[in-house]
Amino acid sequence: MRMKNKVVLVIGGASGIGLAIADRLAAEGAEVFLTGRRSIDVDAAVDKIGNGAIGIVGDAGDSSDIEKMMETLRSKKGRIDALIFNAGVSEPAGLANSTPDHFDRHFSVNTRAPMLAMRAGSSLLGKGSAALLIGSIAGVKGVPTHATYAATKAALRSYVRSWTAEFAELYRHAPA
Ligand SMILES: NC(=O)c1ccc[n+]([C@@H]2O[C@H](COP(=O)([O-])OP(=O)(O)OC[C@H]3O[C@@H](n4cnc5c(N)ncnc54)[C@H](OP(=O)(O)O)[C@@H]3O)[C@@H](O)[C@H]2O)c1
Image (cartoon, rainbow, N blue to C red; front, side):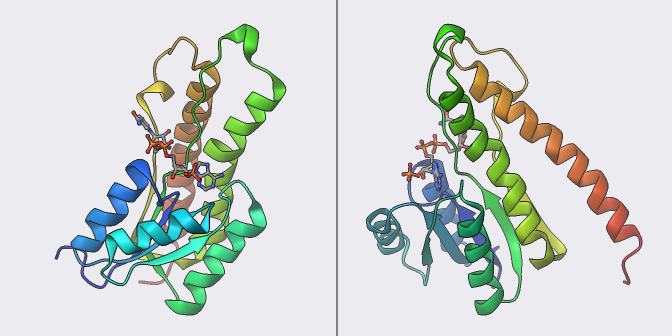
């Protein structure tokens, strides 16, 4: 029960790796909130996890949905101990097939959405809390047919480095 009483938000937690993260953290005692785009998937994930998990339906690529997710956490708990941004899109395409839509879909969910989530959620992250943004080895090495996906994850790594410096500066001046 290493996560007892910890409030965790898993964005993109209704399937895949996000569901596994949410499930494991709930088993470790966390109060888990998970999001997904479709209520049928969110409900199924909540049923599978049990342990009081709460589902929120919302599109991680939509800034107003992100705001609503954070409002739910603010009104129900007043804080987030671990904000986990897991949602991701990865569709193969060589350069010749890398259309503007393909680019926008990837950057919207993999890079823009974590920035929006951090912007909306950072005021709920107190001392000792954590933000986990799921990257990929693709963010540090070349991956044929996944160049745009790789670029989104490289940009995310860059965001994290800058936010880390920004938060360090903020907390340096925060009251103890
Ligand atoms: N699998 C790997 O080998 C691997 C390796 C390195 C990194 N990663 C990263 O790990 C994370 C999870 O990957 P995965 O393999 O579990 O992928 P996945 O099975 O495709 O799951 C992606 C999750 O993101 C959600 N999602 C996508 N777009 C969304 C949106 N607009 N709003 C809300 N949720 C959205 C999906 O929900 P829907 O069901 O609604 O689509 C799904 O729950 C991703 O960030 C991925 O880039 C994966």
